[in-house]
Image 1 (cartoon, helix red, strand yellow):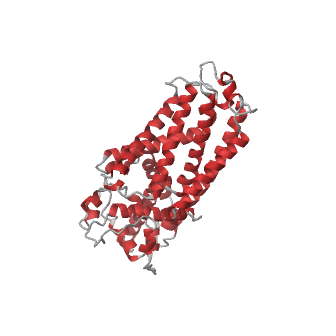
Image 2: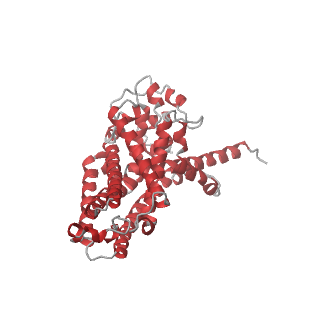
Image 3: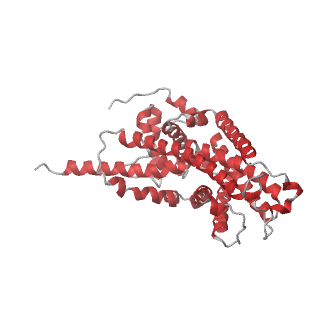
Length: 396
């Protein structure tokens, strides 16, 4: 296989956050100390070598940067201050842009103004659409009691002018469905592109078809448990990712798939499953946000020292989405219809851009690429094991 070397590749990686660290001379310390690497899978060393040599094709077909969960141990012990952990983070941003066939990820990662502009435009679109199709009732201020139920809480689906509660929920459902189709379409197509670059493009890779099914459990297991994070010494890091992943996934599922059961006029008691899941999701997201905010501000943890603009975009959007969600609940319970309506509007203005931008094109996409990388790695291993058996089997 002919390998094309790109001597300008290092300059390209600077756009994704690469800094002027001292050059790695491949002592192997990072690979030796990493709790996630294996004897036949020498990351982060191999990924760094491919990047240094400008071997972009081999790098794009590799899943090594995703198998690194940024424990930080390699960076702490690197004798040359090459910061291999952060280099892996840079390569993950680059690979995200390679999987994205639209080129949007590349724009967001290399030109921060594009991501900010997209967030603002989508937020404005949400606000305008909401005010046009679900305008506030003029009675919100003059007759607030008209929107209070028997429990003393705000009937959130009855706040729009001249629109029934069922129609209100229906219009929100249409918006949810449109958003889900767009996000799923982009993310799934990007994952298929990743599959092509990692598996299908290697014509020498052969493995039994049933491996697609027998190895699929690894994808589900790693997505649900974030188990590879647990191998890092910092257990708080793993717990934070597990909480935010499960919390966000639960909230996203409730909002998109079970909106009619979740967004209702009645305010359920605190022990109802609806509120308990909401409390868990809120706790998980806030735990992660507090941990991340403190870490990136104090910069005592090596993996928090070098923040890319995309890292802050994700954190800020998630923070305001969580805070406005909490305020909606407080205003509803307190019987404040006007505050509930406008906070709900602001909540959507943060929530929609976060999902539309972060899930398929930026930071949230890592939640999908990581477990799929483990899955694809196991498929490659199945092929390598098969080849080893063939080579060791004597000819008859």
